[in-house]
Each structure stands twice: as C-alpha cells, then as structure tokens.
Image 1: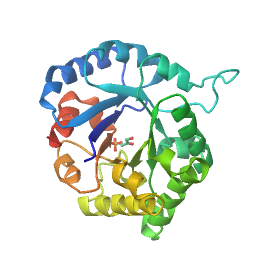
Image 2: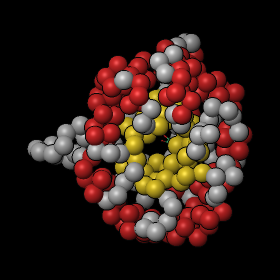
Image 3: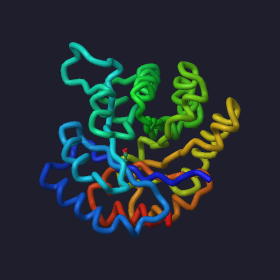
Length: 250
Ligand code: 13P
C-alpha cells in the first residue's frame, strides 16, 4: 500500500505575514487529515520561518530546487546541505517552470536527483508533456525520456528512492485539469515503464498528480489506482483548500 502524499509548491508566492496566517490555518485542522502525508515546499528565504512554525507538527517541508554543487562560488544557488540544515525532507526537481525558464535539461535534472539523494533529501521529480506534445501524440515518449534520464544515470533502484510528480504542462496554473481518465492513463503508463526495469520499484514508487488539483477535483483524482497524491500549486496557498485535498485521501 503506497502512502498518499499531498505536497504544496508555493512557487514564488507568499510573504512572512501570509505564511504565518497560512500555516496557522493548516495547523489548526491538520488532525482532520488522517490518511495522507502533508508537505510544503517553500521559497528558500522562508525556510527558517517554515521550519520553526512546523516544528512539532506532522507536516513535512522542503525546497523547490537544488544546486548540483555542494558549495563554492555559485551565486544564488542553494545546496542540499543547506536544505538539510533546516530539516527539509523533500526537494522539488525538474519542475516544468525550471525546465522552461531556466533551460534545465533531462540530464541536469537527473544530476539534481543524484545530488538530492546524496544530501539525504527525497526528490519530488517532476515530469510531464506540453499541450503540443500531447496533441501530437508523444506524451508517452516525453515522459519515458524524462524518467529514463534518471534511470540511465542512477539506476532504477535510486529512482525508487524518490517520488515522481506527473505534471502535464498544459494543466499547470491554467485551471484546466487532466480528467481522472487522462491522469490515470498517464500514471499507469509511467508505472508500467518503470516495471519493465523493476517491478519492486514500480509497485512502491509514489506517483503524484500535479496540475490544477484543487478541493473540487481531488476526490476523483485521488481515487484513481495509480495516483498516489498530488503536487499542488495555487491551492496550497489557501489553508482550507490544501486541507480539503489532504482530507480527500481519508
Ligand atoms: P497548480 O496547482 O497551480 O496548477 O500548479 C501545479 C504545480 O505546478 C505544482 O508543482
């Protein structure tokens, strides 16, 4: 039985003040979430606030990106050791926004997967196709290429130490969600391609859905056999919505 994981990705949103209000709201009713692990990935500058405010709660937290370097002259970068220093459990890697705006290649994302594992962090490894790719029928090819980049570099067992987040780019921040059938089909395909390398890893690896998951559609999506949780953007910035997604797994 795979544990459901509902992870928030705040992206470049929030402020010290809004975080305090949001986390107070989430903490007040987190005991109503009884079947999902909840996690929040925040902007680096707020990691100290978040780690302090989530102390003594079951809510995990993490970062949104990681440098492939351990330390040194890399202005603006954040190392795995730095995330670790604040008690982070997770780090997002390969988000489509970083692949697009920062030209992150499959190979670089695979390297980040490795760096995260070396630092003891669990990578939330994002994959997914653009609308153009879906419409031209290459979704399976795209996600296979993205997953295989990690398997080729590190082996399938190391892939199994992370979490996959299937985030169709056309559903991110658009309010357009993949239908439960579309999402389930993609997740089942990803699990099947992993199973060709290792059935053990395919059975255990959590595959989250990301792309406009919200309080209204979480029930249907989380009911799908191969959807093991969600990576939530906009709805993770509202306590009631984020909690509702967590409770949908109850
Ligand atoms: P939205 O939930 O805002 O569509 O964002 C999804 C996402 O990109 C999570 O990483």
